[in-house]
Image (cartoon, rainbow, N blue to C red):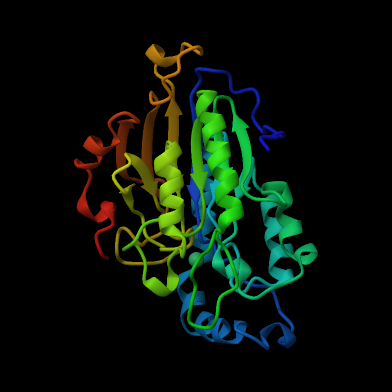
Length: 326
Ligand SMILES: [Fe+2]
């Protein structure tokens, strides 16, 4: 079950810092698509894209953000929490795979609801993204003593809905993975598209099994959960479990509201010296520094915490970043 494997960055030694860039909801401009792709729910989405989305998601903003990310030589990987496409067509999966191959650093992704808008043959969609994800979820990738766990919450939904669902099979595997990694003193970074938190999105767009995932997380713990979907930068706590939940603005979004404009999260994780005894069973001692940066590289927010006292650190952050309504 814990067959990681590729360990993109096996050179990250125990005790070293591991740094990730977190982006989401790219909604890459679609290529020319045949009409037959829209003889379903996609027709509604196409209308919305033509009227709104294509005027909000600007490739120039995404390019500036990627330039900023590329300049950061300390990054170990780019973590993408879904919605690379607009309609989830095979053509868009292929286009996104070509884009992913151009990235200058290792990338990992989970799909979003737009990537699963209607049921589509796996060989023409998800299979194309396996180099940056996996056939089966949850998957794990190791970066030294930090593990990234990808969870799939993307399912086709009826028109006017965009909810997520994980399901019992993934949740059972996730529980076993979290328990095993905890016993190994590995820092666990979980990523999924839909936020596992009530109130961050409307009911029609939220995660159906939020409570079931919350139980798994409260039972086994995890050091950080990343999500997309809301197009809003937020930092909050899952339940009363001292588990940080971090969202991010859409990668190419033009918006007047500071928390909804395009941004990316720079996440640096360090094991403080007092916890670097690998025989210690204390898995709580991880130091996090999260910096939210604009597409142009300006520092918008910065927060540091130790996994032992995240809740106390959260109280010092602006209310808007804690999920205040835009
Ligand atoms: Fe989404």
